[in-house]
Image 1 (cartoon, rainbow, N blue to C red):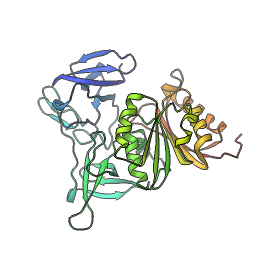
Image 2: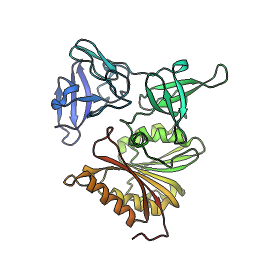
Image 3: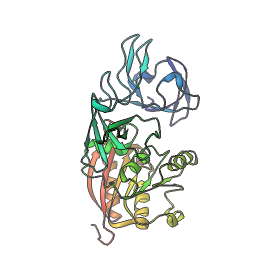
Image 4: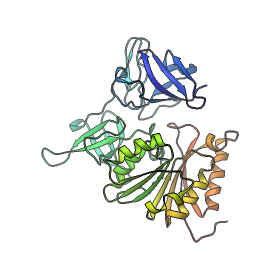
Length: 348
């Protein structure tokens, strides 16, 4: 069963060229919603309509076993439900046989109210659908095709722009919705982000920390690094670093001491990578938040066993674990763990 696919292009309305991320085998599927007999939905697109996709555009397709505030039957979010035969699917979804995916969207103004989330710098936009949003550091700019919402600013004629933060596109957003009591990323914070990829989540972290904060974003892939650098041209509180996170000494001259490390490197030695970077850059009493993908650590062991082993490695690296939450239903067999760094305390 293909669990993770990348859509390379749409030859026609009802076909997609998809690539297995593990084998890199390309196949043409007649129905993206039914890959290998499993229900799957298309992640938030970088364009409003399937027909607008270019050959190089890439979208994620994942097996989606549960519904969430971002995916309800026929409603908004990361790919809505399947449309009726000949009809339209929900926003960003694909319609049923003969149908087309609906347009995504969230309108601001009188239809949407904004409430602060318990995590400083994050907000909840409440309307027809409740959405996690961050205040756009660069109003008018969309980083990866995400929806933007303008809310009345309180002064007549002024509006404040927010960006929808989709938990199916961001592990950190999934952790927030999964119930983490504290992510330690807040306005003014200095953050070291390991595994920055193209900067999707990094851009939201930049929104959260604001102009007084800094995000040091480390990504090893040159291709993703180019996208990261381009994103950082507008978000000047992001310092892009295209380098191997296993070798923090190579970028030590670019960093100051940070308040928090967020890690999403999906490598078997992820815990060691985090500990090594903490030894170089994390303040005593600082925090780490790690996204753990069980299959990347040990695909032969139960996920819970893998998570426990990773937590123990953190203990050995002078961390005191604080929280652990699952990232279901947004990610399968993923957990997010937070811990406090106690540089001078030995843990048994």
